[in-house]
Image 1 (cartoon, one colour):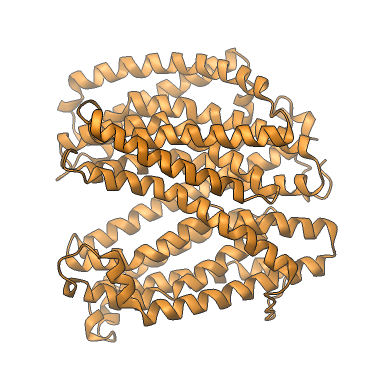
Image 2 (tube, one colour):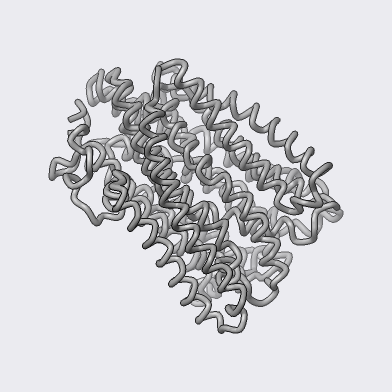
Length: 556
């Protein structure tokens, strides 16, 4: 057993522990996505596409960016490796002292940021509407921003609490905070809640958007509060401790800057795609089609790759702190195999069944057949990069666990430049053939470049990363995927011929049958080929005992 790693009762192997943790995060992420969909639906029902909707979304953009960066490991990647090294090498009280100092230092910094955001709310909104012809239109956004902006304090502190709990291999509760946030907004979108509030709000906020803004703030507070009992249970009190000069605090701060930039770089690449999608050469609706396609891809990416990445960072940090770099590389290798076992067939399935999936999920009302075709074209090119996006989520924690956030940040700069270049080339010379898919293709190509650079640099520093084992696994995965793809291809042909005559409920039923049949072929052939990843996949779904996973004895 890995020294210093406290596992749950039942003596799970290390591999089993990671997969069990990832399965919990996956389930909670799926529930959160459903709640997020219901939240967005309620907001749309209340505000539609009115100026109030624009104002609310604009005011909500900044905390959403903070939430996304915090949730994608920018803070955990800088804090967890330092905190786990303190737990291993120093006393528990010294480690907790560091956590308290980080908590209150972050709180103080974010309080200053929140005050500035409130005071200069108009300037903040004008910055985002620099190309808008009328500033009067955004007066509501200015008021909403003043109400929402303080939530960055609680979002940041919730990220600190989540990072501490993750260090103790507690993943379910921090992951569930997003569910609480979405449910809070849903509650504030109900007439029984927001109508009484309207009479007590200032006149410039006396619309449902004002009540929703209060929901954002309260939801952020709840995200923090529900984690505090778990911290207290582990003996971590939060007595005020301000220590900016502490060496540990400064080390975390020094790592956090590059980590935040690396997280921003990932978001910037998608933002660049939106920028190029507004070109006059692009067909109308390109921006919306790219957004929907990216959301579909993120469903797979967020459900599995990010879940496993979240579970990996504390484990790898413990391994790196103990100097067990060989074990850390084995952990990465097994994670890459299991995620590739999921994302490669998922990518092929999205490519072949993209039109039926989009048609069933979105082709209603104003989202017509043309919209489906545009979105399907974008999804084709996004799906090509799905395995690379997932692999990046797995290799980045290896850098963070060795307390290196600068290398991913530097590579992020190169990737942004490459993305700009590719988008420009595609738009100038290939826009007729690629159409609205060119930004998606640029992002996918850059994802493979990003992973290739991260992999090569880490291998050069720490030696081989088990490429041969991963390659052997991918040969079997590719064979199973080819068989699954044949089924999906035939089903696609049948769908095109007669699915258009079916009601949407019948279409959904047929699509489910097609997906189940394709998955059954894939898993059945994987069983015949004795793919080790099949047992690991079943463990990820909670349908196998850790001891039943082939090769698990290595991790015991």
